[in-house]
Each structure stands twice: as structure tokens, then as C-alpha cells.
Image (cartoon, one colour):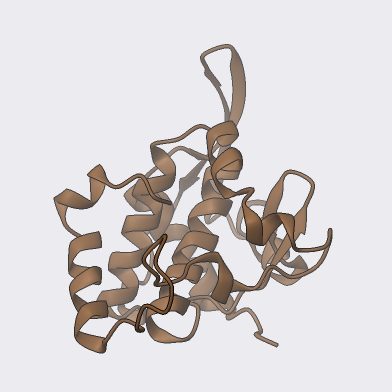
Length: 188
């Protein structure tokens, strides 16, 4: 069972909010699971070690990681949360009050974090929930861990028995995801 790495979790949150300030609470949590799931698919482990739990409105970081996130706001003054009007609703917008220690990330990890932040910024909380309440989410019992290795998989949709991606193909995919062209993808 993975255990959240507090320093990596905090710095991932700070990196996401530095790249995309003002993300809402749902957007931030989706960016975290997307980054961890994508890294897990490409490299066999998540960035933060966080487990994600199924709740009524979507996956959330486990109790330990949620406690760290709360502490970043309430105790450590690392992030700020502002109520902001967006259209006809009000959202809690998150902001980093400190730069992340990005030296703890590999280049690939940082690219994936930036990609995840960019993807979630494009969509409202409702749209993100619609997109992520998929087969994996629906087949996970309430309050149980969502298996990261099933959130993001490297398969070609509609084809059976496709070979696993090679290490070279994975590296190329990381390059594509970190490029300006990645903004055109809507598959996550």
C-alpha cells in the first residue's frame, strides 16, 4: 500500500498552483490524480505516493494527503484559498504562496505535473466530474481506493491485444504531452 510522501505531495500541490494559479478545489484534486495516474502508467509509481478514494462527487486524496493539504492552508501558510465568483457560481480558488522545490522532481515528473495542471484548468468542476466518472470510478466501491493503474492505461481504444508501449514510446509520449501541442488533446 503506497504511503503519501509529504514533501513530494506539498511540492506537487505548489507546482500545480504555480503553473495554474486559481484552480478550484475539484480542479486541484483532479490534477493531482491525473499527474499521479499518468506517472504511474509511464514509470510504475505515482509522484506523490497518495492513494485516491472514491467519494460521491469524485476521487479525493486519502485522509493523510487531505490532512497535508489542509495543513498547507491552515497551519503552514503555503497556499491561500479565496472565494471567487465564476459565472453564476462561487468557487474556492487555490493559490500557492511559496514556490515549489522543483529540484525534488525529475524532468519527466515536472512535465507531467504541468500537463495535469493545464488539462484541469480547461474544464469546470462539473465537466471534470463527468469526464472522470468512468468505468474505473463506477466499479470502485464508495470510500474504497481507486486503483491508479486503471485510471490511465496505455492502450489503443477499440483494439485488442495491443502490445505495451516501449520505453522509447513512453519517452516520446512524455515529450508530446509537455509540448504546446498537448493543449489540443481532450482525452483526459
